[in-house]
Length: 77
Image (cartoon, rainbow, N blue to C red):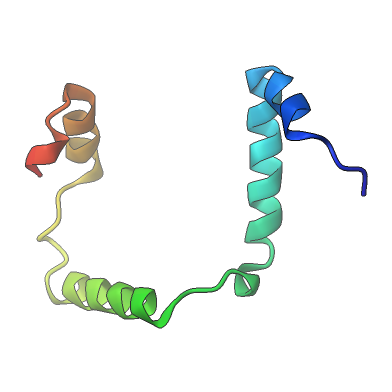
């Protein structure tokens, strides 16, 4: 594989850098087992899933979260 220096990548137009980023991300997503997940993170995810299953209506709808982010009031969640 030919290597492209980082400096050259940073000179690409933004649209091409987005495409490159998406291409790399998709290539990683194709092999999810190759991405290590710590036991601590697995435990946290299990806890959050259990909390959701116990009370699925306790969260805030995405539309409201997005609007708070847009207004800059997301820290008050």
